[in-house]
Image 1 (spheres, rainbow, N blue to C red):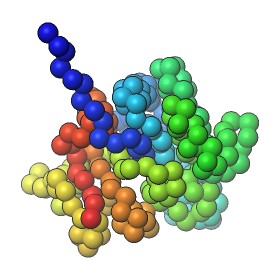
Image 2: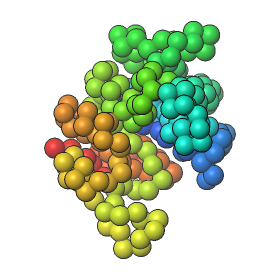
Image 3: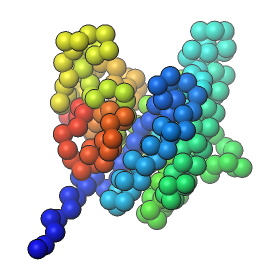
Length: 243
């Protein structure tokens, strides 16, 4: 008997956007080793399919610039502190991936040569072609821009086919599913509709960048086993945002 053919991935190159809170586990604060190692296993599954993976990670589990400015820290300074937090998270994820035998490189938009390469687009693409996962830390390197904007920017720069935005819920809803039991999930939604409804998928700068460059976004639940692999294989997981 012939074995059944293995399903083929829908995407060749993806950008995975991870929030800092996701690395913090249930509390969303600090770095939870178990959660980070589970992420690494899921990313390893996707690499095993031959898919090229880049990751943009947030820093909200350690420090968020906008919240710092509310407490009296100058906004630009707070944003730089948040960027440094994303590099801490990138190194934690790199460590977990390397322990899972997934070759990984960290590139930072803020120069810190002892722990990360500088962000160089052509070098990042070469790493991908060699089968390495590339983690982008340091946001865009500029204050007043979120890591969502960094994800939209990097996805377009390195030629990703889709942004996978990992969250704690299984897609985009018309209202907060944590507060409204009757909230309805969208299977698909256009960029314009999501903007007009003010659905908090990404901030408006990131969203506009995706809309202008026709970069699809899939919002899905990271905390269901094998969900990244399921999305990459084209299964009906989460919510697709596109034209």
